[in-house]
Picture 1 (spheres, helix red, strand yellow):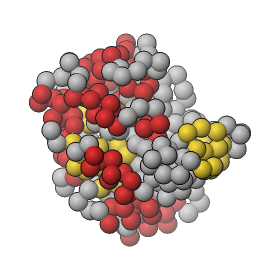
Picture 2 (spheres, helix red, strand yellow):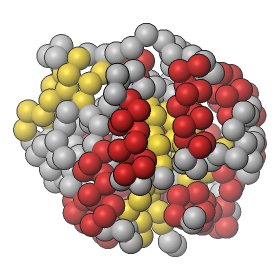
Picture 3 (cartoon, one colour):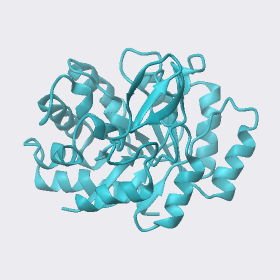
Length: 303
């Protein structure tokens, strides 16, 4: 079965910023926040301080994954140039997104460089309060003027807009505001990460929220969805059920598989992330093909 990884990351060097301050590498794939918290961020077999395109390709090749979409955010630190270089070096294997902080005083020049000069066709925004926009800025209204400036620019440049709104219960998790905003840009593709990141016990909330996004220009990736159902382990029955619910509400043509590598691989294997779909008893063979390959091909690689 053909596979596209619709949510992966290359990392030149860990240089994140989040609610715990700056995040820096400390060797062996580990990282430390300014608060002193340390944790395993990259599997040692991927890299000591980085996750190169070649390291990702080794994983992909070992699992029969044809292509990947390189996304980014504050967790690793913005990696715009490194992502661009990876796409240029391996154009048959990678496409990728740019990102920026709209609060930057030189935001207009940054956007000009990323989208007019470098030619990125995808924009990724992470607004979570752990390691996204709201982790170091006040709460941002996803249907407010600041974000509409971002949406309008993306629409004018025919960008695919990818957004991670964090987890339920946090100030960043604003499905109502986001759904209202999306309706104002019917010609732009929107991709929402992690299927809205439901945790254990969020089944009813997920169903209610997904109904708001049953729109012709909205897709979801399911990257790291299974890891949000801790302490469950593979085969992640609750998360498999969440995928079933999403297919019933949105249709199988609205979901895309992703791994969220490399960081997700510190908690489980790449093989298990693939089998989370291939071994899901609620999905037909055709639905699995769509989620693993066809939808991402249409959204990210067919222009």
